[in-house]
Length: 217
Figure (tube, rainbow, N blue to C red):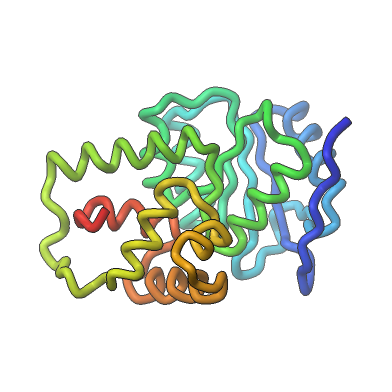
């Protein structure tokens, strides 16, 4: 028996379009999402700012990356990737397309899909813990072999922002970060929003990658 889909207060449903490589996958994901009252499925012709596109694929290949870039940049969508198989090296490629919400197909319950869609809609990341660890490890290797952008200065991130990002990189959610640092959840959310806005970053996962490149964490 599947766990109930968690209810999240929303002013209006999040518009979601489903793109799949085959009709069976398309029908299966649509059936799962129809159980989520916070989501309104569309045919792709109705878009608004921050709408979510959900792409279902078997593996990450060049065609998948092209589709992700098109959805993120050409259609200005927040994207959730549902994938059967994913190598460690694929994580950085997917993140480089601007996608930070990933769900393994075998774990794609209505509740998991809903969390990923809402995270993407809000500009947050949603990765399985092991994939987040791989992303951080790969960014660390890149940092050790390449210099960060020349314009970076230590003043760009405050010590509190660095502390928050270090815990986010360890896989903690907002409530856990707030408890660890003895801040309110609102303070943590505001700090992350201010940081991403100030530095032109897409979301907290992008901020972690930026901080790794710059040598803050």
